Length: 360
Image (cartoon, rainbow, N blue to C red; front, side):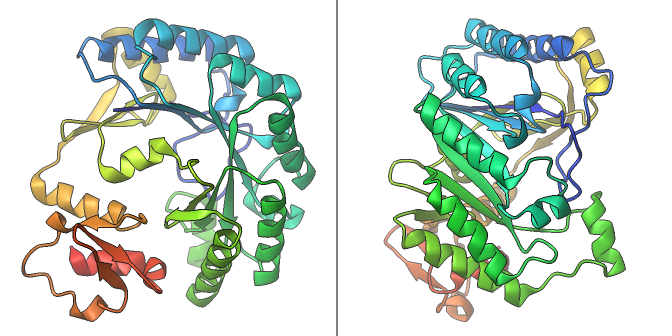
């Protein structure tokens, strides 16, 4: 069982991001924290299983003040049993990092900080709408290392408009020099309802599958040669430093989501909270929860999700999800069978989505 808390606030709205987020505006952040705790109490009445991991995502969780973060952590500890928790991750913005920030996270009980760096080249940070500089990103990692023993993840994006293969090599080199415990390298996708998608539609931005493949391969070769395990399509980790929270999603563990737009899946019942912070606060105040869409996941839908997610992992897809009539011949050069799993091989990771479609 895993817990996710969605903090939707950002100083600036990145033009590529499709997650629910907004600037704080007139939102009372103290009242927002209390609403999260009210929702947590409502959910705790259902006698859910103990949590293995907690993840604070967004948005920008690090926008919350030390006082608000302290209240949130104290409240969660009063509501839930923390004795079974193995990992607590908090996403942070490199633009506002200090040594006191790093120490605060460790004092709160955070074990892992995920930095939304995205690039170490200023021109690409500007394109992506990021507010930090390359030096601030580097400094934030150093501050974490000097002040704490927290694990550090660095998020990167490749195939940014205007980014060359040499640019990507430069960013990977700078990231590796910081020796993060974990590194996520995401291929930019053009999501609906984003500024980037509009430019993609008008032809101002273009997707180049050949360049995507070259950048993917460069990252894989570069990082695996430096002892990082490529354990999921977009994720690399040093030994024993995988993201346990994300692994829980991929293998289909139950998870509880708190906050506006957060999704929960409990016993194959999935619900999403309302995607509006004002409405979220009103609903929490009136009924204690903000559940909006509810879906019962049947066996067929569950199987398709497992194919889409577990095929991306180094362990692969359990064979029980492959039907007897599935013809593996067309993809035989891209997969390998073990006694229990079907794993991608060769150029398979580059084609994971199309392979998943073949198996569906």
